[in-house]
Length: 125
Ligand code: SF4
Image (cartoon, rainbow, N blue to C red; front, side, top):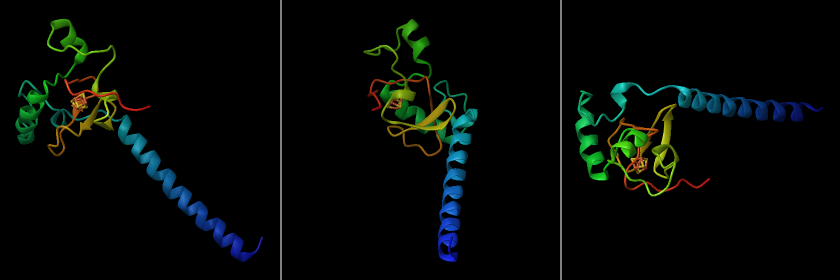
């Protein structure tokens, strides 16, 4: 192996190591649970000042924090079984149990993975 090949190989390895570290970091973050203050709390107990803004938007979407409970009480009527935020096209994973919804742009506020709203659209697989 020439010196040139060796340098090229070392560069590729460095890029790959950096890339894999980024993947590990993203995966680790996705495995963490959301802090309560970062979750949209429809009851208003969450005193994060951003919660009130997010709740106003979420109410317009008819968002519920737990679709299974909401189905039982009749407050959510998904068209198909298994609809929830985690499999919605608008959902972006930020933690093990939460994510950012494109429809609720309030910075730092997350929906529950098992939440749901009337604008649910299946995320392409
Ligand atoms: S179902 Fe989709 S659009 Fe509705 S709150 Fe959840 S992620 Fe957002």
